[in-house]
Length: 111
Image (cartoon, rainbow, N blue to C red; front, side, top):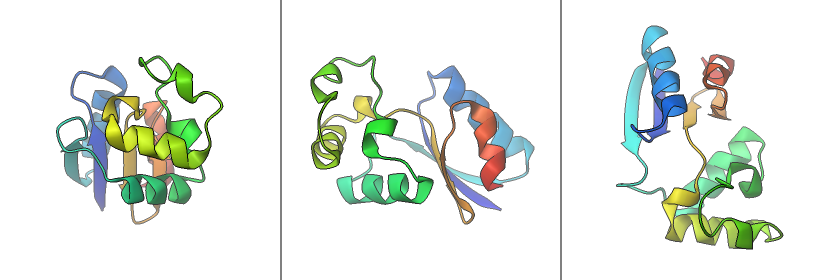
């Protein structure tokens, strides 16, 4: 099985999700989303496939997130595309779907 993870190597949840993917034998494409941020359209697609609103994928504790508390989906996506630190991690995609792997065990839902 192939999987893609938008990953931050400094994040324990992201590292745990990656370990679970490897443990399941997945062929994993690892994207450091802070160095190679996803484009706005890709983010919109990932959240739609996950059944989430962009607001659900907002990393609330980051500076700048509070200003987006009442923002619409378009504004949140614009902000995430401009500042990838606002993207909650890890996002994981397989042919079976997309999850925001918090907790990391959510990756099992799409394996």
